[in-house]
Image (cartoon, helix red, strand yellow):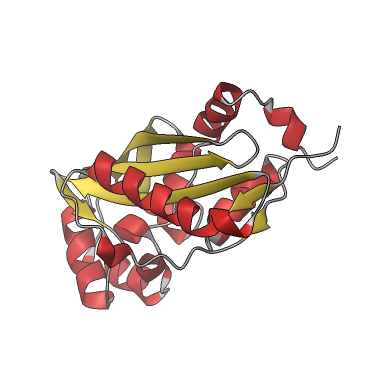
Length: 198
């Protein structure tokens, strides 16, 4: 049986690496969807809608296969944060985040072109951040990493040094929940091992 085509509608290198580490070699096709078109105040609704819009933008380019869209935000005390727009905003975020916790929401949308089905789900992981000195915050911002990530940190990068613990799925914090992906594929009638690049 041939491997079903798996398309990642994201330019995220972190998501691509997660899939590759799990044996899935995705076709990368960034959606370039304008996220400013979606204005929702509730985190689960926001990430699920954006994930679905990204997948739907890419899906018409493929006659068959699975198309996955994802989107992540960090909510602190109920306030939603995506990527910081500049170093000043990243600094302000970290002054709030340090010695505190936030909930990382990732929306997952999976479009099955062969079976004409779409699944949309959300995974939430609680992230506890370490106490940080102003010097450490400045040094971390100077790496440039916080400006590229939802919530202004990357668990798999320098930011991992400033995460005390997580409650829930760790891969979700990186941008894609592998357990949730396995469950979604099963719901569509696939086995995760069908997608292994053997």
